[in-house]
Length: 348
Image 1 (spheres, rainbow, N blue to C red):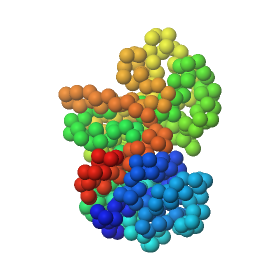
Image 2: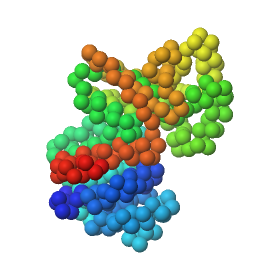
Image 3: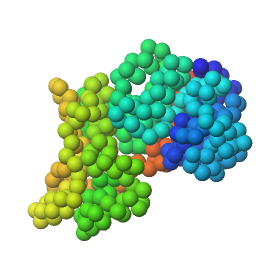
Image 4: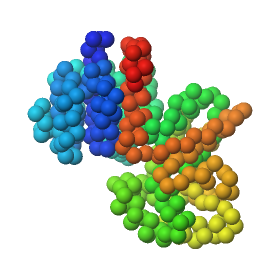
């Protein structure tokens, strides 16, 4: 139940304490925002750490010092507690949902978002699963309850693609881009002469791939992002409706053949918004001067075409800190909509 006042600040429950969750807490500390953004609980797979008044800066530092899956070892730890137990014991205003994406059922993330909305909490999330599985339902529920559901970090992390598309949604004709940093890294390495298997092992070693690499290599991750962009445009696009071409060992020949013709190869996600919405993810050849061809390594580049213009956005495709930046922007937007604090805007 939302209970904050200007004096108390905005009370946050953070569900999921992996790289994005830790990045978020680090940013709150670095920007000295822990008094205004009061983290009252952090939940991971084994339990929670709870501080009803909000963790102090030192308390947040303690959480960051704990190993993965270890927040319940904190001095304020509650082993075995999940979101329901936390919300039964603390007042909160915003659920920050950062658990891993589940594209089949929505997973814990969908349960968390539904529970939060039912209890009157605003929601900020970087989890694509709930939006892909039940995004239209969640948006309707949030609107009906007068709550905010913000998810800019689900696509391009901290790069503001979703706010841009939302702002010009009535004019958007299509969106296409390099939306998966992992596969772009693989293609970049193959362009540099590595074999696909060598590039894959390198990506694994760097932690670039999803825990289940098929989400990257079979185009599920960029397809999910197309579903979310369609949602922003007011359309319902199911994941299974997106045509996907997998990326595999044969790509070396494709890259070599394209290179011999002076072309580049990129793994492109395309959303057609004219008439019936359609999505596809596939390898595409393009001239080196094409904006998408300029994506290197872990970069994302997206072109948004409108009736009168074309806008190009470039940014890091992910990573804990970059995604946490997007999450923090959404949290600050909720805060400012509630409190309109000029000082916080200036400092942040």
